[in-house]
Image 1: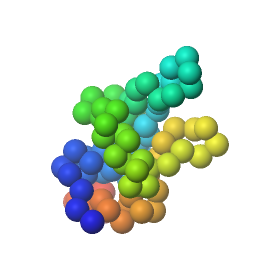
Image 2: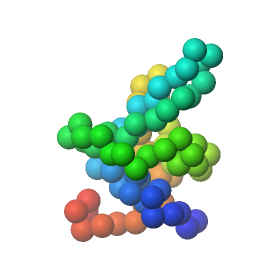
Image 3: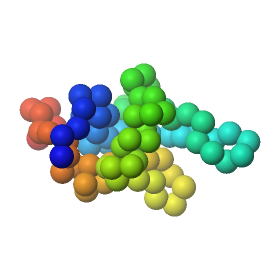
Length: 85
């Protein structure tokens, strides 16, 4: 399956140990998402549409209400780069 360049960037950050934290509105629906690198830096290129696309493809998942992390399927989708081998 072919994925976009922005999806590749996010999955690559998550494969290195990053996480996606979500913000919920008063009704409990997802209002925003923030991507953090493993060092704790905010990665600004993640928007709600991209987050939903990654979730729909089952390349990210949350466990027990924690932050979203990459899944095995997401690891299979991300292309190898020299700095994550």
